[in-house]
Amino acid sequence: MTTPSTSVPRLVIVDDTDPTIQYSPSSAFSLDSTGALDYFGNGGPVFNQTLTGTTTNASLSYTFNGTFVRAMLAAVGTTYSWNCTVDGHQITSFTVNIDQVTNYIACDSAGTLQGTTSNHTLDVNLFFLPTNTSNSTQSLWLDSIQYQPLPSDPLDSVMLRVHNSDPSVTYSNSSGGWSWQGFESNSTQRTGTSMNFAFNGSSVSLYSVNFGSPTLFNASTAFYAIDGNTGVNFDLPGSATVQNTGNYSNIINYPLFTASNLSTSPHNIEVATSYNDSKTPQYLSIDYFIVKTNPVNSTSLEHASNSSSTDSTSRSPSNVASRVGGVIGGVIGLAALLFLLYYIRKRKQQQYSSMMLDITGGGPGYYRSGAFGGDTLEVTPFITSAAPPGTSHIPMKYAADQDSTAYTGLPSASSSAAGPSSSGHPRDSSGWDSNRFVMSKRPRILQVEDEQLQRSQIHQHDDSGMRIPPRDEGVIDDVPPTYTES
Image 1 (cartoon, one colour):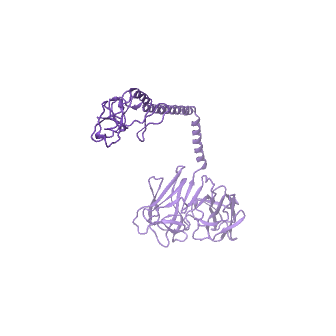
Image 2 (cartoon, one colour; image 1 turned 180 degrees about the horizontal axis):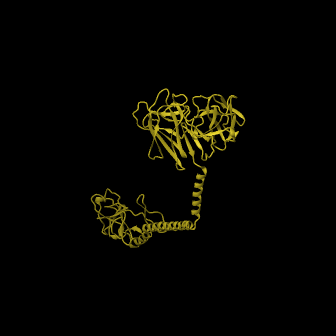
Image 3 (cartoon, one colour; image 1 turned 135 degrees about the vertical axis):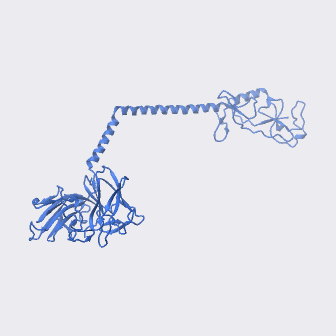
């Protein structure tokens, strides 16, 4: 049994005309480029429309570097045979269905080369029965040699066969339109069903299966679009007969279209069915794609050119000067920003340090700031307390401003029975309790306290009002509200 394509989804195709294939003796081989055998059987057209064949015993060899290899032959008649070896070790050969004629898998290496990285040589030996002569209709033809490349292979301008099971092929199968129809193909008849193939190459061809047995199918249409460009329609031919039997058949390796002259960049091709009203439309069948990969040198040269251009630009005098100027400008800008932040911070400190308790008598408990050339009322840090019932009061900051007593806020049960003394001050033994009053301070004491207050600084914070932090200089007093007796 041949190795399934699902096990080797990517294979490099080496055409029979490749000069690295050695034919021996060379005189025994001839080239056919007429495509005479393309539709003679149900094997489908040969690769690149060329075959190199012989009618006598001969051999061919090819050296490759990969982990799998197989030989693809075409054969006419029945009096022939072959065997294959890799590095002198025989590998499995397969019998053929004489109705197929083309695209025979003559032999393959299966898993014998897995894990190897060295070069290998495939030898194919062709034999005919002694009765076969050069004028005989019996012939064997090499179509191609296909091998699985190493992961490190650059795939430089090669023809790459990519099976429909490869991860680069994806299907929009939410509707269940795609199904496995045999011959290693994935197929659909449902209108609007699509698939995508991501590749990197200058041309791409799609190969399918043209179904015709046991059911006949009518011609239909489909389309493809590359990189989201306008779609291109192509035909899905109806069932067809083959020459050697005259019967309808399932023709494999059937080419549907080729898109060429693509740019040397990654591409995505979408393939989808078109609308048709036929009861039995031909399947859109995805067997495999063949991609002509991009030359490695062109990609390398492009990268080298870009790298050289970038390097040249980066070293030019004008570019160096612009970079130096940019660095200097950045340093100057940073210095200016730091100076601005320092100035703003200093200015705020001066503003807060100039805010002092208003001792001019303009109002109780206000603070004023002279930092901006004027007296501005800022905050009311103290709230006036109520006087005892039945009395009125005048808030004061200093009792010396008036020749009267000030209310301390301490209640007394005997306040209504007291009366003023001859000096105008409350008596100690009657009326208001002396502990509830603050006597007028002497002017000298007031002057000292005023000087101490002038040396104090008040800071206002953003989080919770006013605070009086400890300072090295000056004395900070906690000044409560005061009231005078009416």
